[in-house]
Amino acid sequence: MGEGLVGLCHTVCVFALLHSSAAVVGGIQQLSRQAILHGLFRTRTGGVDDPANRERLTAVGANLDWEIADAESLPYADASFDVVLSCVGVMFAPHHQIAADELVRVCRPSGTIGLVSWTPQGFIGRLLGTMRPYAPPPPPGAQPPPLWGDEAHVRGLLGDGVRDVVARRQVVRVDAYATPAEFRESFKAYYGPVLSVYRSLGDDTERVAAVDAALDELARSADIGRDGSLVMEWEYLLLTATRT
Image (cartoon, rainbow, N blue to C red):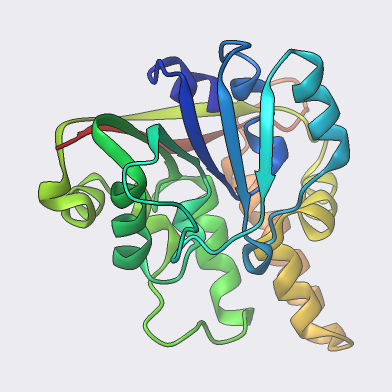
């Protein structure tokens, strides 16, 4: 998924907005060893600066600057980057228009903006919808993250700040979990939006059990495996645009 995004964005100076470092490590490794990557991890969306991922990227020759900042107020001057990437990152900023304006602002004229976002209809979009009744109230004015997976919504956010928009829906095949229960336990432990819901429930065993059951059923409903193993396809929107 990250590899497809990076492959469309040839560059010498990149800013990458990441929700989870592990989600795009494989893609970033495909960049030129001379590329400069700026990784932004937003702690309030569950992003983490994982030392193991730093080591993996450094090992392939990437020159990395890791910074923690706010996706709605990026600490960079206008037109700082040739390419601005987000792999399931900016979609978790609560105020979509503010975050989109920041992506456009830090990209130089004729530069490239590349976005990968989970679609509302896809597996993660459905997962986030499943979590919503159990989650704490979002910040005032917040919009649902999967809207970034709707082409019309993203076109509206980027507006006249871009041209030559190209969008396509694709799927990533996921077969890393043997059972729905294994999937559920992994997401409880590592996936920020799910992790935050469980933390908010605390010792409410009845609601915890309800979320457990909902995640298990979601995985079962998405299973396309034919040999007893859990296989899913998660849909995402891959969108690129040229800064005007």
